[in-house]
Image (cartoon, rainbow, N blue to C red):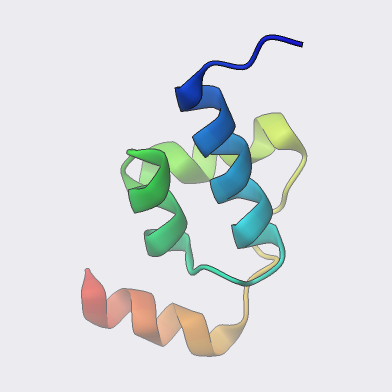
Length: 64
């Protein structure tokens, strides 16, 4: 399997987001994407954007 660095970082960001280890904004930053781009990318990995604790929403909003 050939993974380039960008794809490996994307997989890591998606997995950490899915496991609620990173907020949406943090995962997007790690992946080098905007929150909107990262949100759209989650679908490609079959990860719901709503797999997201409400407490993180207020944290993300304050960081926006």
